[in-house]
Image (cartoon, rainbow, N blue to C red; front, side, top):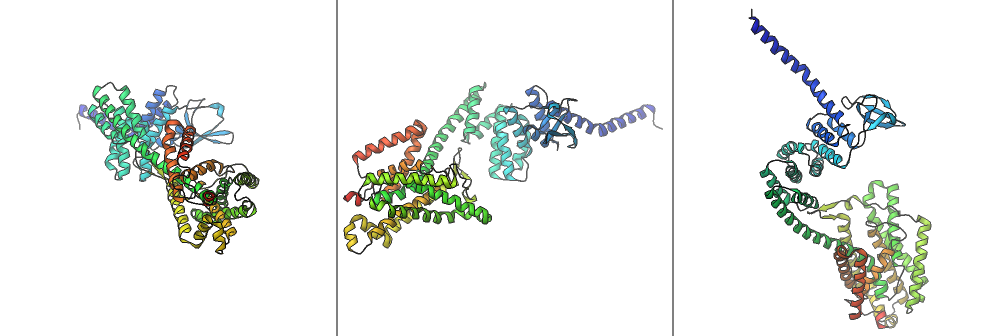
Length: 543
């Protein structure tokens, strides 16, 4: 037999172990339940502490609770102060226990009190949820989680970020986790050496978010060494951001120039080559945009799986529709008004009003939705917050392709030769057997058709409405006059020049003043060079 003292010691150890085995889960449940209950407290400070504890608990119930809190579905039942997850069904709220996820009844809204959150809490919750998905199998989810932690920067996420960084294999995601860890260490860390290393990591990321973070540290930090390092990193980032901002302005300027080029290249034919002031040119652009809408509706109805190819059908369809309208306008009205520019201007202005009202009658006055194919959606993120959108890139390429094809038609085809012959000497061309009347009609139709093609491109970046063309008609005339009457290359140079100047002036003077300055500059330029940058001889010049 064991001595009494040893026996008592054995019993004591046995009961302690038994208590640990059976009581530990109960204590864990009680701890999680207390943290959930603390979310309903009045103090936002205590709520933040509870969120951090819940996020660090690694409990499988954490995500539903935090998601419910973020979405405004976490309530406190007034009768017993129990925190519940709700789901509204009809006129009542179905209640779920956050500990068991089981339904525990239903209540009206008067018997419940919503757990309130503010913007700071929302950032912390998003960061906590982000930390919980840092180990997802999906790289996109891990990247999104790292971005969320970077914005919220809760101190409790530092161990998870360190662990996730060691396990990460994707270079892009790894970079985001490094930034999130550096930002969190800088604000919540206690080790000065690690905080200085964090500043070095952050200085390599020239983004507005990093600049704001380092700016706040440089303004509020008490440690002289860290304050100086933050200021130096902030200066470096601001210099790089200024460079990337200039690159972004160049891209935006080229993008705007490509839009102006598409809108003006058709006008360069009708106005520059034929000498016709066509105030309905913007409405021909609008017809192209509405043709795109009709084509896409047909694809949505009959070929939904081939929607990505709808623009390849819309481009020739818009060219034919707008070109047909252009030929009808020339044959019905314009041909009687050659040599009378004021009457032509008034007549085409009236036509523009008729076309606008026609579209309002058929489609209504509101904007119409034109979708973008999947291959035109998204963007290329370069750095420093600079993103190059695919739709703008495709429009730039498309505009250059259009002007290149038009130049080939003008220079290498029989129709282009006849058009240039009629432009240079109508009587001589007629005596050579060229049907000058039909050349006029086809030339006007070509310019109008290109306007319709421009409408297809503009439908991808602007609202499709009866007023679409009005936004581009004045700019189109400025491009043609500045580039040189009758010169396609002048139109290209003029469009991109005006686009770049506009985009660099807008940050300094604003959009309206920038346009005014550009208009004044063009007026002064025309005083010195009345025929523009690259003028060609045409009918209007000869007369």
